[in-house]
Image (cartoon, rainbow, N blue to C red):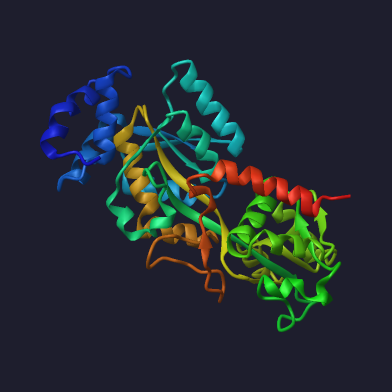
Length: 349
């Protein structure tokens, strides 16, 4: 939905008045989120000066540089951050909306975490001029969110145990007899299911079952913990290692290498606007900032990849083919199927 300047002028006063969440107020937030007039920046800044700040719900523990950069750009705004796990944030948002508490302005959360919030009608679709610079696959089809930071799951190896020239570099390479019994996988529910999903989508279910015959050890730990075991030499090869973990550790001298074996699942974090945001102008300014060239460069300095064209920081020397699994229209059903396949193939007795 695009809002004309005339339509925006008719409903903006309701937002300024600070009314409770009536139909008029909902329309006002929708108008603010979708306004595309030439005076959009001035309109957002004027509204944000009245709001004076915003509340961000996030899982991010490293985004302080972005928050400080945003507050330098808009010194009249202060950002309050509520951190938690993906599950905690989703539960908190649902509980608050259920009892009529409207304090959340925006989210910085994985697309998989945002699905439940979206389906509870807590998110407001939005338009930003920055969206034009992003890959279409990184934008939720109904514009409820846009991916702003991402990592990629691929093949990690211990270079002391496997010289880089000998390590597998494709999904098909993993089927070689020499790797039978030498691989490990993270048992994290999301990492494992998304990995299996990527294989199903690109190689088919039969390939998953053939890979299962390679006697892969399952570690009930996160991918980061598995990378630590690889540094220690307990694990020498894994197809469920994040490029960001390898880059951070290798820069400190760890004997790790990483390869994109083909299309890889993206572990993403996206920005989204709360439908009843008390500070929608300030929230839209922050959404713009996180998506901007400056914001994406900051995410890159933290080790994350980008869906923004021209800022698409790849993983080392790897050209990454990306699968935005969380943006698939039937993701919830597919995730359940991939999880079952993972259990059947890799967790069999």
